[in-house]
Amino acid sequence: MQPLPDSDLVVATPERVSFDYQIAGLGTRAIAQVLDLLIVGFILTAVYFVAIAVSVAGLSIAILFFAIGAFVVIFGYFWLSESLWSGQTVGKKAFRLRAVGDRGEPLTFAQAGIRNIVRIVDFLPYAYGVGLIVLFANGKGKRLGDLAAGTIVVKDSDHVWLWQVPGAQGPAPPPVAYAPASAAELTLRRLEPELRRFVTSYARRRPELSLQVRVQLATQVQSSLRTALPDVFAESGPLAALDRLADLERS
Image 1 (cartoon, one colour):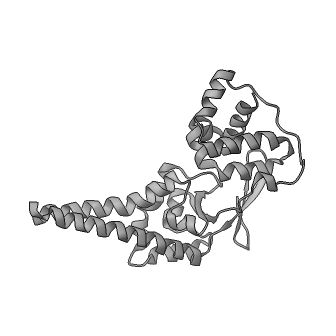
Image 2 (cartoon, helix red, strand yellow):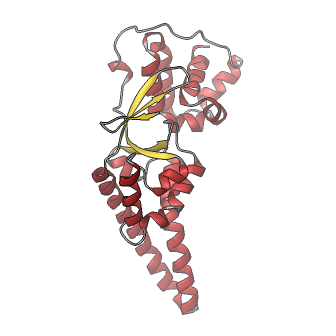
Image 3 (cartoon, one colour):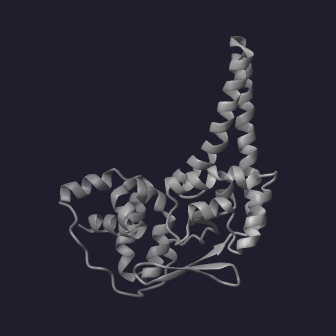
């Protein structure tokens, strides 16, 4: 991994294929953060009215309820969103940003938790004062939470559709029989319809795709791949999971 002068991040995969991420700029991150904070503020308002409703049980209970609810909302929103949506919140998704690991790998649940818990320090003394200082000081677009979690916020890659991919660019890997036909069909039937269509098209077009394009396609559906084949995804990454499903489809 190496940062470039034009704020690009080049990552080499185990297959010795290099692809780059563009590091998200401060302005785009700030706008995405404002959108997320508006959503959090709306949820906190709902929690506040609920706290008022339970205030009949006592003022101290209402205050405690709101304090706990506010903590859960503020950290739960960012933590769960980035964990479940592969490094994205509503704000990041709207502006095509994504938090990933330092080597370009998908964000883990632990990394999402660390980077958002450290957000407390980043926000000090107010308006992300510490976070901005650290971000400019390290020159890698990382606030303190990113340094602690080993993550970085990048611009999401342009979406590539299979029908847009040019002609044959390399041989396909040989198909491997990972499971009996009945087990394979059972696995494929559990896929979401959209992912099943994607896998079917990918399996048919795979002989025409270069490794770099396959990596990019797998990255685009990595959230669905993690759900479909969690063990393969965790051990070998999104491309291995997509190839496994393609092999099952071909078998």
